[in-house]
Length: 356
Image 1: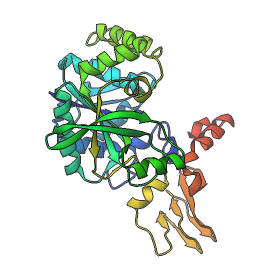
Image 2: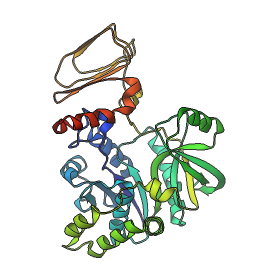
Image 3: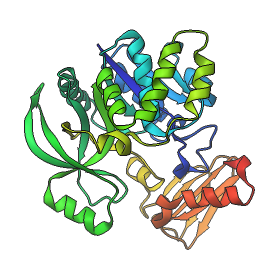
Image 4: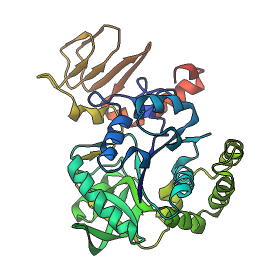
């Protein structure tokens, strides 16, 4: 049986001030009239029944998840007591999935990514699931179309075989975010994919890989597994989870694993990782501006303005992001949009944690 595990635990700091700790990116309506989580669940409901879809999120976001996607059974909302990065989240989800289906296939995907061609996405996913059913560890790589420095990359090795008509390749190596020169080289070689963060494997296979490469995480998961489904589960989870290693599945497992397959994903993927990433999904005026809310843009070009209940006026500026939400205002040059975490850090250091 196949199960989807949607990871909805990110903080979405690059969308401050719209995104807050109490309402991060995955719960916002960034594109269209659905939140990013709702879009992801709707996409997966074309592939699986709701009872086979799991959402792993922070315990503090339980009510938001239940409100936004009430069709997902309450027992399928997996709550993390604290954030320990993706290796722990995926390991915990594997433990829960195995309570129902010891060798079930897990489709693991982020809650906050955009996919334009959902039909093609599902075709690619069927191929990945077929590969996973044959005990393969699979990642989906996105066909690169620009020298992007904000994504990790996957180097493609030799062709392996087709699954459900979809080609697969051996992974030569995983590469972290490159500088501009490296990214240009990757694109020109034609042998690199963007790392989408979408993985497909059997639950028992990923548990074995965690045991091989992250033994301390595996030990903690075993303690949680011993009490899963009992009244002791919440307490043991709380005690054990906080001590689990904080490491991503990419660093902790995928970069070390042998015989990983990559399947190309050509379905219009975007991680929507910053305010500037939204521009291609918004309507612009003749000066390249995007205005959402009340205001006027005078002698202004290539500027994004979003505001809730305040009037915004700009004069003689260009290439800016101006966002007002709940009394906080961000003014940022577009070239700095990927560095918004610096603002978060500065706000914390100056005692403004209440607006984060």
